[in-house]
Image 1 (tube, rainbow, N blue to C red):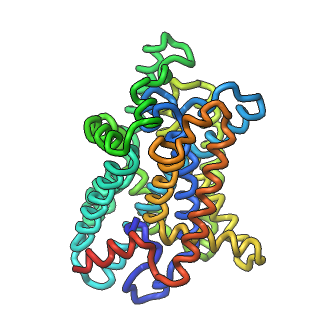
Image 2 (image 1 turned 90 degrees about the horizontal axis):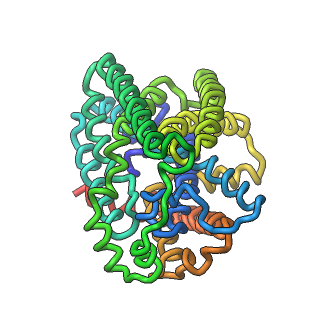
Image 3 (image 1 turned 60 degrees about the vertical axis):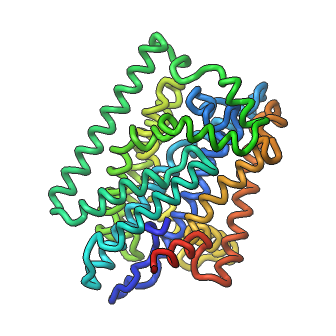
Length: 403
């Protein structure tokens, strides 16, 4: 996620250094995205099972009331929120690179288009070899569009932002209405369904080559998410640009005031909307993940920013936490890919096969798996950055693009 870099490279003023808040936010977003994705890996049918609603239901049958409540809370906190935050932060990174190019008198998009195309290639490899619900390909396409939009007038950018947001809300409303009609107006039938037996067997017992071939043969369906959420992606990118230009991530009075407003409005509107979507059941999946979740993500961003404001001189424990999160943020691309590789090896039959072996053990093991992978990422990123300036995949990207 090189485009989400938290530094203004080559700038000639006081913003040359990295913005610590951006690194922490990006680290939280990466680990939070895994909070949602771990249920995909752990569910029956894995990547294909999502289309039958398996990611929206329990990964383990027969859960106790405590286990069910824990899983519901875990999913509620994560579903779509951190992905939206990551998308917004990608827009912030794009704004940073645009400003850096302008201050150095470089053409735009200039070399940035090669970054975006390289990211698309990375996402394609990630999709084929690791994870069907990759976000990098969609980010790369939207980045090219928004990079061009940044050369247009402020009015054109504002109109595009509003139109894309409106079209997205309308599309999610229509999809929700279609699910309600399909389920006869109930609250549990539209997005559910029994898992595909062949898909369950493929991820539980099939070989790695078979899984790769399955992704390729079903690529049109598995790549649908960035298509129908295209309006949201553009909206969140442009929102990130607007927030950066307004100074929302600066360590000054104006930045702190903006963060308080983001927390107030985001949590004040997002929590009720997400609760209502949760009560609506599976038929409200689209409005939940792609409508209410981005609102709450803005509240998360503001809340984390406010917490950082209060920790300007943190104690040893708080400093260790923020440093660990920042390390993940600085190696975001590497950590994003690695977390999916680790989850794949832990859950699928090509590795430990935990998804089938522990299918009846309730939600505790996916939550535990998330915690273990987070620990690996935090530790690995911190140790890596002691010797290197960039993450491993970030370094490869940087060297190849330099040529």
